[in-house]
Length: 119
Image (spheres, one colour):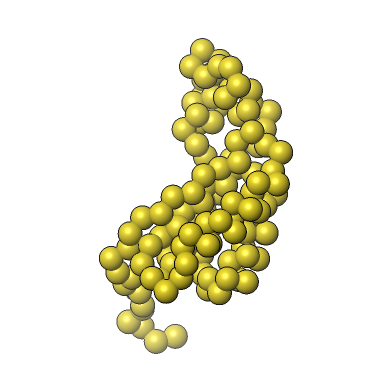
């Protein structure tokens, strides 16, 4: 198993990615509000121009300030490369300079946590 993580800066495509997950029979994902280090520094320093400058700074300032982290665990039977390529094809339509990135990590096991109390 592998966990697929998508750090998504262009949130206009989040629903398209989730729709694609459903189409590809990915049954679950978790979505977390996130913020990159550069954006946090810019907010903390009241602009951060001394630390971040040039095209990277211009891409961050004035754009949306937060991102989403979407992650899901893919069983070994899933074609990870196909899923990644499908997400890429959705995000290639973005006109933003900083769209996001993806990475995977191995998962050695999943351990559900259940209540011992009956409801």
